[in-house]
Image: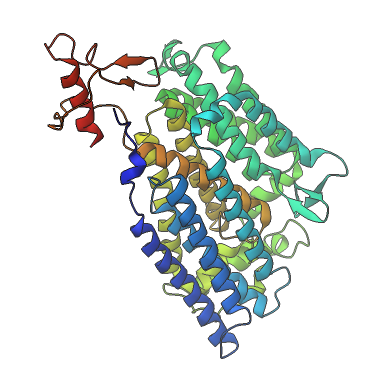
Amino acid sequence: MTALRPEENAPARIAEAVLLVVALALGMGGMWMVGYSLEDGLPDGFWTYSIVLAALAFTAHIVLRLRAPYADQVILPAVVLLNSVSMAMILRQDLVDIRGANASRHLMWTALGIVVACVVIFVIRDHRSLRRLTYTAMIVGIVLVVLPLIPGLGQELNGAKIWIYIGGFSLQPAEFAKIAFAVFFAGYLVANRDTLALAGKKFMGLQLPRLRDLGPILIVWAVSLAVLIGEKDLGTSLLFFGLFVGMLYLATDRVGWIVIGLVMFAAGAVVAWSIFSHVQARVDVWLDPLNAELYDRDFGGSYQIVQGMFAMAYGGMFGAGWGEGYPQYVPFAFSDFIYAALGEELGLTGLLAILLIYLVIVQRGLRHAVGVRDGFGKLLAGGLAFVMALQLFVVVGGITRIIPLTGLTLPFMAQGGSSLLANWIVIALMLRISDAARRPSSLPTRGALADPAPAPVGGDAIEVGGGSPVQAGTEAGAGRGATPDDATQIVRGVDR
């Protein structure tokens, strides 16, 4: 019989192509308005940036049509929109010679990120193959976390020791470590979630885990504290520990893990605050940024966060307009504080629109975590979506003073190499899992109508769930008086 090939009726991905055009048009419109606001004409490099971005976006679109035709059609345009808007903002800062802003460099890393994402989609044909790398991913993640602590390799920048320098390029290994840890957590939890969910005693209505099951969470807690203490980075520490606790909850559906996780992290943070001066400085800036002594401090003061607050306040509801703000007064407005710079020129309305785009990406990731058929894929997709949401909260929460400021960057928008590269890999994995979640099953469904067309004599073997071949007519029609030809027709009815 003819094997079922879902690719034969795969969607043409027209919706994705149309949304890509809209996303690129918004980004190009931003660059156009920046040019006419600052130079009364198209900015230098406008056509180069526009053509390269369009070529990269539609190359990714073609790769998805060839390798993942059933992948989500909203995620890629949403990410391209974020990248295009960030290109307009960084170009706007580059035109007025803000130190550090480099639109060409941002485009280069964007191009590299999209190319690597396409390679990931080509190479990883089935996300379940990553499950074999569970403990390898754990080792890789720990090594990446430790790299900045190696003398001569890691360097401290802006109070945090989270960067390494190799051959003139700087990288933030934690951005890639979060991917490795997500793979490890998904593989570990899918193998042990029954024990974690069912074993243990109840205490005050909470199902507590057994002491020996606390081993992995204690290890992750220790690694998170090591990052907080050794690298002086509260954001990365919170990201790693939050990722594991969030995935624990996804795997077990037990609120007890959330409570235990929050208590452990809070206890570690309080101890670190009481011992280490750099943690105390971050908390002081968070609690009282307008304090004159903190504002005038040369290093570790509140100047940056206060300038960011002033910028967002100046933007108001609808913003000053592209090119009409003053990002030169906000330190690192092209990277750590690009959200504040966007708030000044796009206003609260623009910032809410950006948050909604992130929300769409996270929602689609969680939706495909529910839809994919295997437990590993569910946990991996859920973990990747959750870590993006958590990173967004940590960055925006720090800029808006919901939590103390951290050294993390806004995914897809902040200028930088490692952040763009790592988050494009996250998107590639989410698209690969969404393809598996949306792809029609090749197995026959219950209640399928028989195809009236004549079937070949003898009945071909069909594959059921990746197991042993089952002869059509031997089991498919057993117990119902069906002939081999009848069973073959039932399967062919699904095939068509």
